[in-house]
Image 1 (spheres, rainbow, N blue to C red):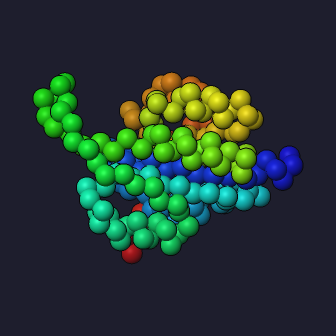
Image 2: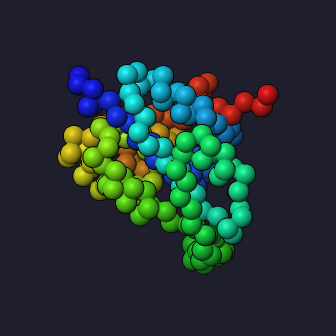
Length: 173
């Protein structure tokens, strides 16, 4: 394998992962995620690590965002929008950062050969198909019950968060 096949970019759908972690009953540590991927993908150069999250206001999660930046993540944010959910009959909030993730994937596509996408959102199906057509190797990380079938079917590799818990779980020290 040539060294050109060893450039990695990571894309973390923060809101989607928040709910996946909440479902699992444990949270991962963004620092340990980077460490794990560097070790797991031997001879791989980490090119980019993006983290996307919705915010209540401009100051929301300021400390967390600053910590992500200090770890080397590029952080993209959007203010949450409130909408009425006809199904539940309640108001909900959503940031919809899918477009930002896809834009970053394609704006940086020449920089990497491998992608690790932390999301279970089926809206990424077509973007993943297009990246794979460019010989990009795609790994999707999510959890059972949160991963869309169409996303799981289109990826090269699927990793369940619970299978790597010991390597990435946030430890209270």
